[in-house]
Image (cartoon, rainbow, N blue to C red; front, side):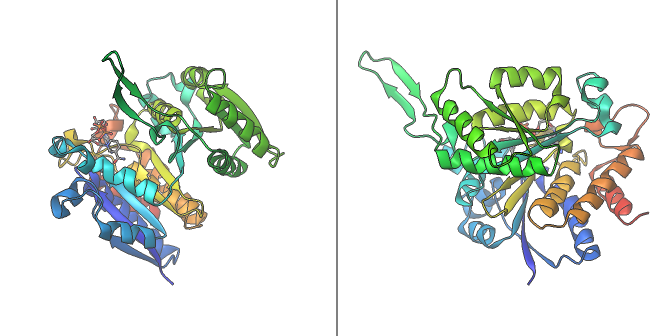
Length: 360
Ligand code: NAD
């Protein structure tokens, strides 16, 4: 039976980068006989304009029936003034929690060809290959109670709840350890166990799960030190596992080590390994419609989909290899351009990856 892939192009540069990623997906579908059935849906601002809500029932139905989802990005200034519960990002948060996509994988890989694009010295980042595993459906972003209340003396007080259940920690730990087994077998768990009780439990559960993986080395690091170490000596890490809020911040910092956000893919997985795949960047309204968007993060998200949900690592390797070939050829969209390289637009970049895949 055909495997269903739901394609959600999203807003601003979303459809531009998605067109290139879909070309690549269709190519590997044919070449590796994957028998994929692509369906299209609306999410975010595009959905709001067409249906009045950022996550229409129809999209959710398609998402629940799909084996994997490929998303561009959602949101932008056009919808800045809409009510909070209708904002495009709400659609994204809702789809993540409806599908229980608890495990967010964000690789920070620096292609050697782009070492000059990083803000750090090339020797600090060349060959960087970190995988950040962030818990995505729990922690302080979802904890209750939350809100802003008025105290007896009339002063306002804002509050959130940082809460993790043992089962939530255990499942993200298993994901991190399983992934480490496919890499350098090292997991660094990031917490703030010197101050926050919830992360004392986090650390304890990490130790318990580690006992089931004697072949994987576990270390712990406080989040403040982890932020520092990421900038000082990022290559010391293999897999970094952490909670929702710390992961949000650290993964953006790690993204910048690689120079361009236009290069970084991500995956969000559920317990069964089904997932949503998307670039780490947003909708880039400042460059939308100008052919300047780098499609490689979305193309590399397709590679992650093939590796983690569709179990076709050969196709994933082929795409990653094709991206490397194109970088070797010196082709660059403006975000990764340095003098002496060949400046290309979004479509040319997608076509070049396709040609490299076909061996031409
Ligand atoms: P952004 O990632 O869209 O853009 C930040 C900068 O990076 C901009 O200068 C942009 O031009 C550049 N950039 C981003 N992607 C690029 C690409 N593929 N190629 C070349 N350059 C690229 O972040 P932002 O400006 O803070 O957000 C814009 C909108 O995107 C906001 O509405 C935000 O809410 C939304 N957003 C959506 C997602 C998502 O859908 N997952 C994630 C982040 C931001």
